[in-house]
Length: 154
Image (cartoon, rainbow, N blue to C red; front, side, top):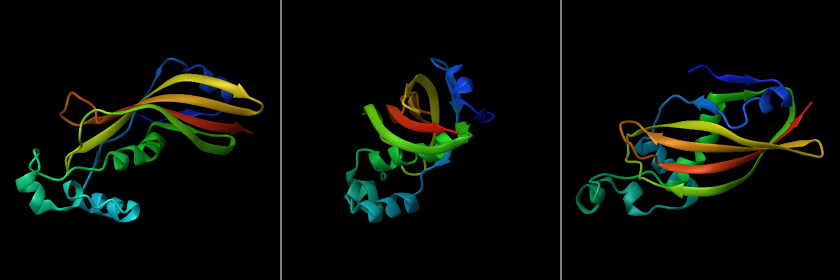
């Protein structure tokens, strides 16, 4: 799917309540999981110990950290929407986050986004984006959340 280009608040406003698009699939590798474990100091065996996961995990393999899955959403968001003519963009918060399904190593995930609302706040626009992290060939998504972004348009 082609990336959505938004150049102004008025263009953004037309998408309230609508699907914005989906990203490409991204493969979650063991190397990425290990680097995330190093960055967050979360070396729980279910994520990083491949041999133990084969025997002790109910999944027979390692899993991506839930917060790794959450952390790749900005990368996937940039594939879905490009917002131009802004002075500033800030991640403002997350609401209604739910981890629904583990992401097994070497799974492919993609983001799907819908614009729930836009709110003007003294020169700043607060966007609430409903995101779903889908797992390829799995009916149940990895996670669902409402991301809050702040934009200051030129």
